[in-house]
Image (tube, rainbow, N blue to C red; front, side, top):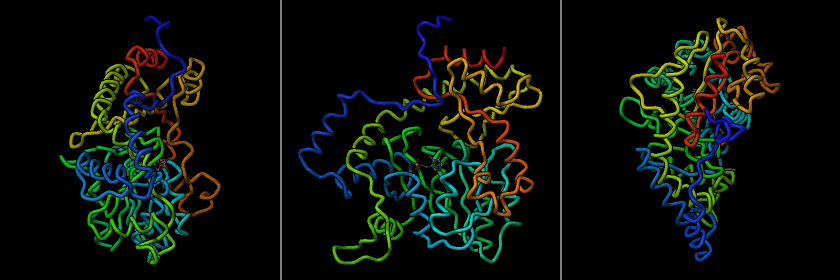
Length: 372
Ligand SMILES: *Cc1c(COP(=O)(O)O)cnc(C)c1O
């Protein structure tokens, strides 16, 4: 392998950027129209284009995924307690605290690492109003079982779908499940608008409530219906999203090649497990987690340090668990005895670098560090 040609360091992800020249006409249009934000033409075009690309009915764009999560909870007037996963990015639970809601952590499934439907019912109390699962790494949750529980107990379901851009489940978008799904378009995600996010909903009335809530609660010039936030996506971000969307199929295809390469090479390595590829879904190859099992000669953290020493900056997503952060750890549901599967996964996982431009030579080098 010719290491001289490779780029070091390698980070867990790297955004795909279209040629700068391709973005200039969009900027020229913004300069000419002087329309910078507030549901301008690019904002409207991107909403339409994403509905079509993702196969969803209604989408409302946001400044970022976190404000979209906070607003999703307000859209459905969620209060009291919400059942959620400890194995996620901290923004999932933060969105509950920002609404004065008590998170109730439920353990995850050992295969998919998503919220375990078999454990949800035991966590429901008279205060429970909703379930907030996460399609972790873009692996679809068990959406049918979750919906059945929600219907039985009269609960809402809001998916944190920050990892699930373009993910298909049983031949249709996974984003059509639940009452609402929330996307993130942060720079580290599969599809990015620098910063950005969105809420997907099923009807026009809900979409209009979301649009009011992200614009201070304004319905018209003189009517404010709620203490809404400013969550509007700007025209620059929306224009960039339109340009990004043109290249997203190719980016997903390149990610798939990288994932296949990892899977083939790592199948031989004792003590390293990959998450299973599920038959009824088409993923987006957003992340490539491995589990470092007790049979492997190094601890997870020793392997993580070995990567670093070799210029490979992998990430321990998700470690620590959300439930271990100071603002959550005193909750009864945050005890590690309540979350044995999540606790184990958090101590075994490393997400390896994966992005469209990652050279297969680099993948081979990363695998060689694991195998040696
Ligand atoms: C990225 C992410 C978020 C937050 O999205 P931002 O756009 O960065 O605010 C929320 N939840 C999960 C699971 C994420 O990965």
